Image (tube, rainbow, N blue to C red; front, side, top):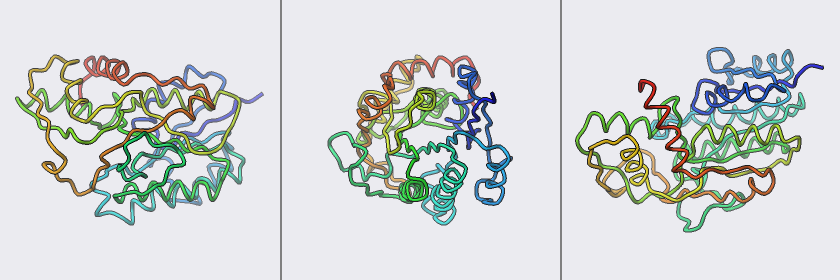
Length: 291
């Protein structure tokens, strides 16, 4: 009997690469990883043709426009990639009876909460990126209500560009750094998120809806930077600053904590502590050149 095929879009991104690393641990599935070079998701005819020929059992959509500040001046492109494309993918998944997992973000919220966000809390994005991701969620559930959406936050990995790698590079180059201390959340090691997704896929049960996933704990970006500094033994001095002192084109949420009870209860997903996961990632990065 042929193994079920898992299509992973955005295969060259942080999460896509972590899923590639994890794939050999799931020999009961075949995987195909695509990116813009070999499957342009905005070419709907091409996507339809791919599904018709390959008939994937699962589609994990890791593809997204994630340049939050650039999104402010590229609204049409961002809405297309993070919104329209997701709706089309969901529609095709429904047609071919493909189980759809879509990755979303804490940015669908405005960050004004004081308690961890639950899946059914009121959304109210405060920047274009957040608006586009919310549109993607809405179109996803409209086109294929049997989809699973996983919202995550502060994603980093040993692959791609992210806060941890940026901090390691800057700490090697500069004697001092300023890092925002009044934005609170919990980081997500993409390797842990990849494992959570595969736990769901391999569980044999499918409960559609929205889920939240990030690592355990509560920190600021400043705390995150200090933790990186300590792990690499840097002498760089890290100064806490306010959001107001570091203006960016896109407004960032002050509060990004996600409540993970639902994913733990429904899928018995283990959520590692942020400190242990960061240590694991930094150890990998120390062994390889920063790019």
